[in-house]
Each structure stands twice: as C-alpha cells, then as structure tokens.
Length: 231
Image 1 (cartoon, helix red, strand yellow):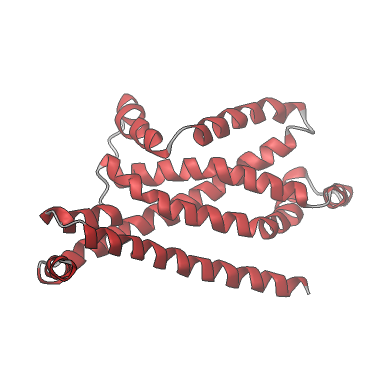
Image 2: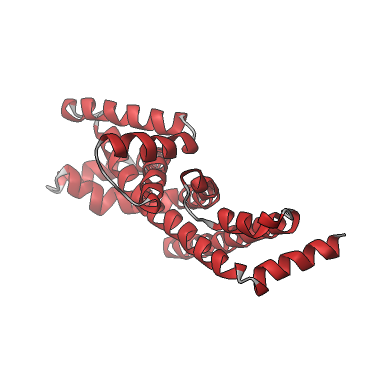
C-alpha cells in the first residue's frame, strides 16, 4: 500500500512535472519569509527605539503608546486573521489593487515587526545605560548614539531570538494559501490532489525540516562569528 502511494507521488512529482510547482512554491515562500523578516527588522527596530525613548522623553511617550497598541494587536491576533483583514478589508477599502504575494509579504512583515520590537527592546535594554550616557556626553544626538553605539550591540545580543523569529516566520508562511498565495504548502497540496495526500504531506514536512535545519546551522555560524569577535 505504501509503495503504491509512493509511486503515485513520484508520478505526480516527476512525470507530471509537479516539481515545477514545488520550485515556484519554494520561491514564493522564500520571498515572503526573507522580505517579511527584513520589513519586520525595520519596523521592529524603530518601534523598539521609540518605546525605549518614551521612558525618557514626553514627546516620544505618546508615540510609544501607539507602538504598544500596534504590538498588542499583531501579537494578539492570529496571522491568518491579519492576512484576511489586509487582503479582503483594508486594501479594498483603501482602493488599492495589490498582488496577493505582496499582501502576504507586507502582512508577515508587519506581524514580524511586532515580535521583533520586543526582541530589540530587550536587546537595547541589555546594553549598559552608561554607554548611552557616554555617547551623549561626547556630543552625539540620541539617534546617533542609538545607531552608532547601542543598536550594534543590541543586535548582537538579540541574534539568537531574531534567528528564532526568522524560523517561526518560515513555518508561518504555510498559511499564506488562505489568500490564494501559491506557497510550498499549496504546491504539495496540488500534488496530492489525486486523493493521495499521505506522501506529499510527509515530504512537505521533510522540506520544512530541511529548511529550518539549514537556517539553524547558518544562525549558529553567525553567532559563533560574533562570539569570536568578543574575544
């Protein structure tokens, strides 16, 4: 029985050129994960800086409240709901006609930004406050002190948590099919459309395991490189 299911899978994957769909799905998954993570880094870092500054300045205090609302919403609602809201509600109401892959990238980026903001905030707070004070004493502005002194150290301190966020983002891309984005999961779902889903879904799980394994190795290599620089 298992051998028969395997033969059906091979026929769909090779003879019926299902591998082309897998390559397309992998490309879209990579786009969503990589660009979403980069957007998340930018948004999350900005929100983290504002939230830290909000404790020291009345001007930033109210802006940091907006950041709290943003983080609370995107951490408190499922990513699927956020995808559906942006694709079927927010963009149509704004009159914006946008490709669903771009919607997925934006949604995952904004969602990741909420988590990255807390990661980066912890990283910033882990840097000794005396270094910020020293930067200001040397005549650097608050933004310059953050960019030149604090953020590089905060990024290094936050690297393991950021790596985990990237891995989580890769796995979360499997729900992009809710707005008809053709990702890796959808590719294997199409291969299993002949009512033989056992093997395609097992291979799909293996694909994600391999991707996550490769990312884990790369992240550990970067961590070791940073650790050597400390010595």
